[in-house]
Amino acid sequence: MAGRMALWTNLDRPVCCMCEYWIGERELQFIGGVKLNGIIAQVIPQGKCQAKNNCLSGFSNPCAVSCFAYKKWHKLP
Image (tube, rainbow, N blue to C red; front, side, top):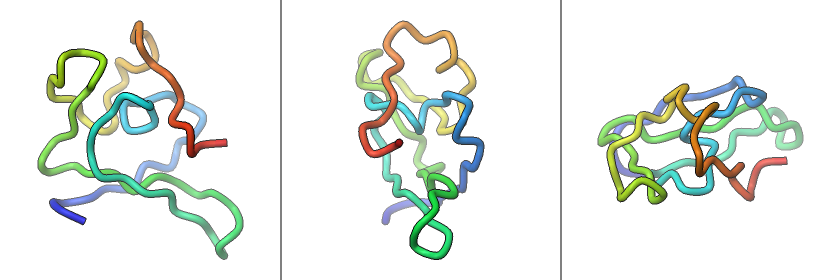
């Protein structure tokens, strides 16, 4: 993985790193290999949003709550 990563664990609240259109390194983190615990997402360099002409988008950007294009990442339950 490139860049610095951070862990996002509030999986009930939509943020940019949980969106299908967010471009950046990310992976799912599981507890005991079974229960989904969070998303490890790229922080530096900052991710981008495909739906908004590849503009920079922070991984924990709360604007995803009201974003016109937000679509939950297909790997999330």
